[in-house]
Image (cartoon, rainbow, N blue to C red; front, side, top):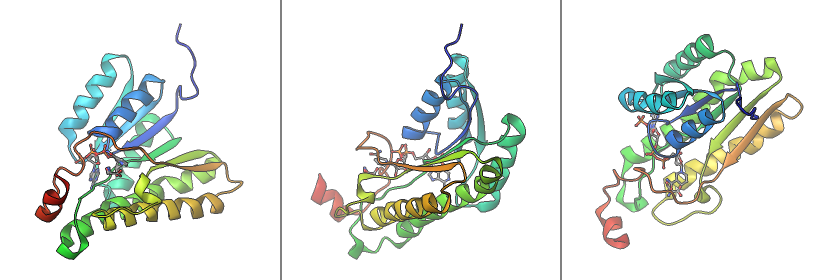
Length: 209
Ligand SMILES: NC(=O)C1=CN([C@@H]2O[C@H](COP(=O)(O)OP(=O)(O)OC[C@H]3O[C@@H](n4cnc5c(N)ncnc54)[C@H](OP(=O)(O)O)[C@@H]3O)[C@@H](O)[C@H]2O)C=CC1
Ligand SMILES: N[C@@H](C=O)C(=O)O
């Protein structure tokens, strides 16, 4: 007989679940009995994660979604709810990271970092929040970073983007007091994933390696 767990039957969205921390989190949550919606841009990778979850008897629904595009996020949440029911937990994990010195003006990387790490978080929260408030329950989990509380060189824009999420979370937590909706930030330590592998600031690469 299956042992009941606190996550049994919960409906949980994990963004950025096609690799790294999001993928590992989705697999772990499904193993605890949650129905997991796995969202990211690379559908083929999401399907591999779904296969891995289903092989051990878990439930996972892959949905292609770019968190920077608000309409795609709303549609992902609609599809998730029509398949699995109301969202209990949103894990805002999708993120990008470039190691770069600000003076080297990697402007496209700055913009992408803010689009994904800040606006993507707004879009995802915006798509689930009213439903959670109406149901008087829900949990928003934001993946930030150690550099969300203390800056480090070569990470100015990334660190700023994660400070943003910490600030948003503190304010939202106060705004939601008494509603039954919780907000949590998690600051993972350094984890070996593909993040940062597209960094191409040669000065940083020379500095670090
Ligand atoms: N690794 C580490 O040391 C640490 C990581 N973190 C944070 O953890 C989170 C996960 O990072 P990690 O697992 O390391 O990195 P990965 O690069 O392995 O994962 C990042 C995920 O984000 C997704 N993603 C990126 N852009 C978008 C987008 N526009 N829309 C939807 N999904 C997107 C990617 O999927 P796809 O490309 O398929 O869209 C991918 O699944 C990030 O927020 C990161 O800042 C925090 C502290 C330490
Ligand atoms: N390693 C950094 C990015 O992934 C971090 O600690 O946030």
